Length: 105
Image 1 (tube, rainbow, N blue to C red):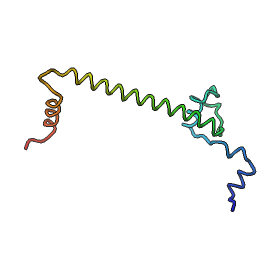
Image 2 (image 1 turned 90 degrees about the vertical axis):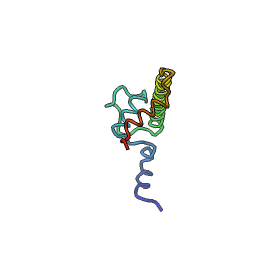
Image 3 (image 1 turned 90 degrees about the horizontal axis):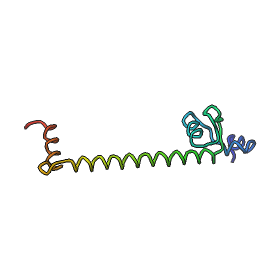
Image 4 (image 1 turned 180 degrees about the vertical axis):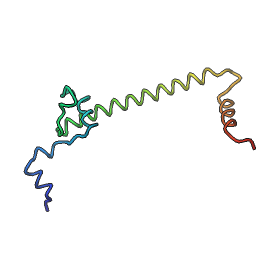
């Protein structure tokens, strides 16, 4: 059983391999696709392979940025932990912080 959509794609086989872009997708294809020189040059439909390559590059760069932020946060926490004096341990600092937020019984 064929549907109207299948019949439409059978009459235009190149449309089935195309991906329709919205605003963010156009930016991703422009920025990471390296085929277009401006965002306005990106057409409304691009080949799926071209879009997948651009999306993969964007995903890898976003993952690398998040890993760098996590490593930076870990470095800050290590620095803050090492700056505590011998008299003040992390446990005592956390207890003071917890007790300052709880209500006096």
